[in-house]
Image 1 (tube, rainbow, N blue to C red):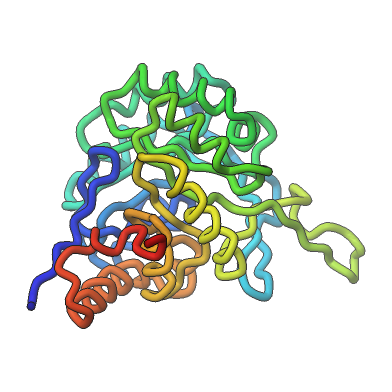
Image 2: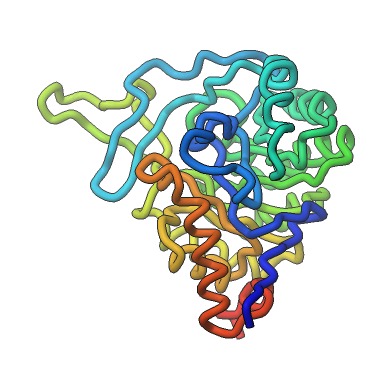
Length: 304
């Protein structure tokens, strides 16, 4: 055997391989062009985009922890109109899928964003109902099954694109949220967003982050993320994009075996800007070495 089928289907969105980059860690994708060929990836999830430009939170915004990263960026971005006019035309030069992560302060804002982004060049929408670093919207929608469902319905009514809903781990029962947004029409789910955390400067005796609390990502959250993918896979029928601390091919395989159809690479991009492409190549090599003709044979295989 010398060929492996790595193609997967995420709620109607076909990826050439199951590796995408996580929103907020890869910019629009253009920032990484000097380091890797974007065409090697299954997709790029563009940084969180809002209806109007956002300055984000006051500094300090980042803290490196012993096994991860705390951030409190607060969805800084130039707004959807700038994205459509200045960024999207440049992205159309590449043969991969650009998925736009959207975030709103109200249900109505999510609907307006979906309508504006229903254009050629945008492959799908990732609906962020789980950002822990904003005061309005964000995680407030992702911790209430009814509110999360309202957002999904508003987005679905305003777009023909596949709708992927990004779930928060900062809940008591992630399965309840997953089932609610699936029932509301989500075509796929991505999980997990960051865990709420904080750090304190012992010399100043003050919190380090300007926002006091932020989102924790990186290898330290992988066991939590993996557990949630495992639980949600058994509870829903839509495909999952698994993420949370994936830094190696073996990490990616764990998520796929737990039930993820695709994986998303986040914090690891800051240490190695080529890591996403390397993981995609590594998955193909693993399949070749183990007689796997189609990567889909591995999805959820650990459950059997």
